[in-house]
Length: 315
Image 1: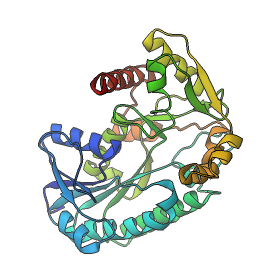
Image 2: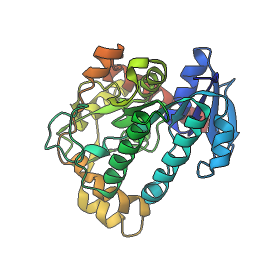
Image 3: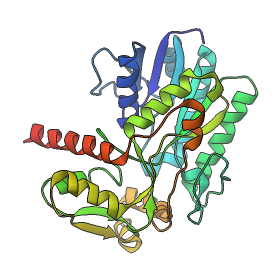
């Protein structure tokens, strides 16, 4: 590493929370998105660059110590655009002689029949987006093996936490609970399902950028023991002092909504995640890097408070 800047592609909840953490650690932080507009912590630089433009990517990475790839696009565009991001950001990090840390999903595993997912779980994706992600993992790790760039991959489950809106445990759950309405859950709500607290995602990515022993492999970022969606919703309700009101959304409804909605149309193929147990075993990162997950009750409390403050500001 020759630079001194931590460059983060993406200003969604993961990128913004990571920027806040790194800035609090005294790091020089630059966030990058296409528009050049975002609400970021004080002291964090914001740069506008199109991640599809290699020259622009090289320019924002030129003084990087670590490059974090947290950029994403809407579901309908992922298969087309995410591989192109992979190419430009990997090249930008390599040319800057910076480490590359990639935020990944569980899609690479495909259905597991309820078996816990670990770093040794085979990649057997059955979806377009899962196959695309699995191919990209091979490309990242090949770049590391070939000596082009040091790469570490951090894999997360469904996000929840402050700033997290577009998630199955996000704006379909907390705003409704705040007003005593029905929390919208997915599929079979009595199966265990793992969630990644956004603060743990940020801590995990930051550690992957720092630690030598983290390089050249994929890691499951810290995840608390899985509970059912019904139990998690009950924790949200208990935090608010209300009785839980739940609505379980079936696959058929998602398919019907997909007739007129591009996001829902693409979401259908991922619905298997809510019809079998989704259990993440993140003991490797806790054992090796010392990163334990935030307890669900603590994370839910922080998330409820963030949504409460957001509602009060809007009012």
